[in-house]
Amino acid sequence: MKNLIRLVFVILSILLLVSMSGARPVRAGNSADAEFIGFLEDAWVNAILHKNADVLYRVMADDFSGVSPNGQRYTKAEAIADVQSGFYAVEKMDLQNVDVRVFGEMALVTYYQNEKSRFGDEDTTGRYTFTDVWLKRDGVWEVISSHGTPLVLP
Image (tube, rainbow, N blue to C red; front, side):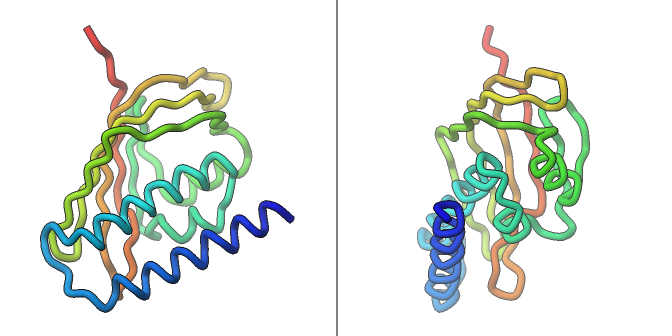
């Protein structure tokens, strides 16, 4: 029941923010869109942590294409299946230094990610840097691409 209430809250928040952001003109540096995309990034993280496929289906475009920190390419369907099955199991995921830049109907997000996780039998705990590309289609922001790289400090 608690998860259902959380899911309803997330969906209602997304719908409210989408309706509010749709009334504003989109231009480079639009802070309302940048804030909303930051919210969607957080929703994406929480969906992974709580294995919430409904939110994953919402934020990821059908033609999503990603590259994991180990260099493997993956699709939306593969990402959601890995999360739902527990093959990609995340205990902790924190984003830091999130930078959202909006360019009309496209946005570029860069950030650092600390996570405690497993991918199959492999411990994938670590610090990564990511670049995500978001696209606004028919008034709805969706992530179309994500690329992660392990962050190795000297």
